[in-house]
Structure formats: C-alpha cells, structure tokens
Amino acid sequence: MAKIMTTMDKNVSDYIEKQKSPQKDICKELRHIILKTFPNIREEMKWGVPAYDNGRYYLVALKNHVNLGFSLKGLSKEEQSLFEGSGKTMKHIKVKSLKEIDESRIVKLLKLVKKRYVI
Image (tube, rainbow, N blue to C red; front, top):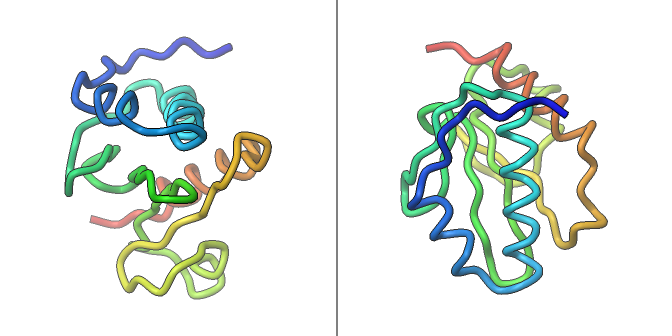
C-alpha cells in the first residue's frame, strides 16, 4: 500500500466526521483513494467542501450519495462524457454505497484529469 505523505487537513476530517452513514464511510474511502493516488496532493476546504489540488477535485456529501467532482479543464468532449452532471467547468461521479466504489476507475479518472489539466 502506498504511503500517504499528505498532511490530512483537520477541517476536511471534521467535515467527513460530521456526515451520516453511508456518506461518511464513502467520503473516507474516496479521500483515501485520492491521497493514495497522489501522496503529495494539497487537501483543503474550498466552497465549503473538501477540495484537492487547488480545486481540481472535490468531495461533497449529499442526502443520498457522495459526489466526487473533477475539473474539466483540458478534457476533450469524449473525456468529459466519462462524468455525470451538466457543469461547464466541473463534473462528478455519484457514489451511493461503499460497494459502488470502483477504485481502478476512480484512479484512472483522477490521473486523466491531472494529465489533461491546463492552467
């Protein structure tokens, strides 16, 4: 297992701990995947939710699921179609249960966005 180098942000931990189940467990697992994939990523609270790499990715716990959001900067229309939502700058994938988490797919999407991201 990859060692996580990122200092976990206390405000992000507090946000996750305040969530109800299953959203709390989903957020914990998605956070772990992000930090394992990018051990030196910057974690912070932005827009009232956990954000990573200056807003390139975010987590938000909603009533019946958790959204893992991704910046669309630099992505082709075909690549953007891998995500849900109608945002012009950010889209997401919806996770309704721990069983639904497909780590290999999530890692591929995280790496795709990091590779394509243009400043």
